[in-house]
Image (tube, rainbow, N blue to C red):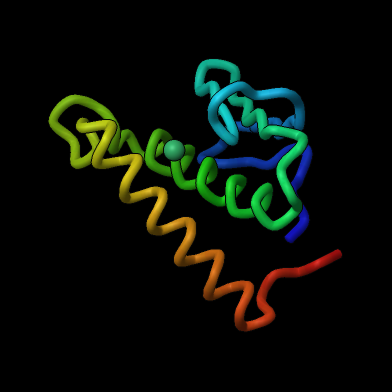
Length: 101
Ligand SMILES: [Zn+2]
């Protein structure tokens, strides 16, 4: 999977940056539309982490993390995003659907 430097989601342009991140694999800053991924991660973990953060972006873009919405509980969002991203990455990877270019 190619991790793009920029991508569009819900009409907004987002940036993906690699750098030093403490304690977690990545940080998504919604106000700045930026995903910062820990630079020292192995490539496959970077890709899986990118998918993980992308799902957070989709949820945020759809407003599903707002009060009264399904992911108002941030722990529920985290567990759901984690299982979906890991499962999706495994299916895409195991079936040769990740473009390696
Ligand atoms: Zn997360």
